[in-house]
Picture 1 (spheres, rainbow, N blue to C red):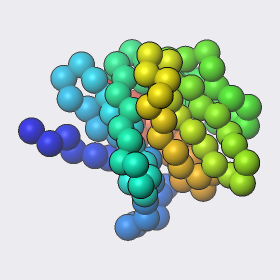
Picture 2 (picture 1 turned 90 degrees about the horizontal axis):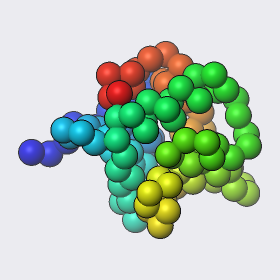
Picture 3 (picture 1 turned 135 degrees about the vertical axis):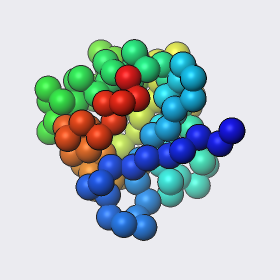
Picture 4 (picture 1 turned 120 degrees about the horizontal axis):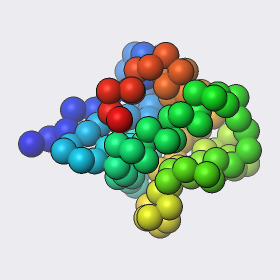
Length: 114
């Protein structure tokens, strides 16, 4: 069974963005324009902790390291997401797509994944 991917409603129609899906006991994150097609897999609880931080601190520009999903902000607007349990699995996006994702988180669009 192929997972059904969801992106934030704040992401432009047809635009590449961060996508989330779920299978039993797991949550998957990917960036549709990432040429490596990397998929970060985590648990619903870990994803819940991650989105809780972003709901409290939506405009954060410093690394997020206190959750099982780490976020690092690089040069030229690059944003990297990785799981602490799989540090070599890195999803790469840009600041515009990240901001659309965070707006979706704040609006509760991904709450059903936890």
